[in-house]
Length: 134
Image (cartoon, rainbow, N blue to C red; front, side):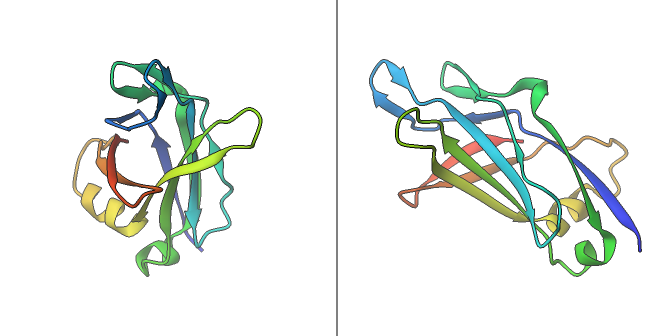
């Protein structure tokens, strides 16, 4: 059985409407998992807020191993949940991205560089879209 390794590094979420009060921004982090695989969930640190961006920098690299047959059969989905870190009432998922891993793999095939950058839209809890760069 062959396995593939994916390294995923979340860089930033931008234009993410996370204002509670005009001067206070919600602290957010991301939970990343591969649906359809036994790979574990990974959690980023709380993102730093700069301008209109929440950034994770290089500290958010995550490694996932998955079966090649499941990847080729399009059975694996990358799921990224954006979570509002709340102190008293528990954390709350405020946005989500789901993308088939085969789509990511096929789009990177033939590129000589091992690193590919993509921008994905996040569906927030109200059903509208925000953008992130991964």
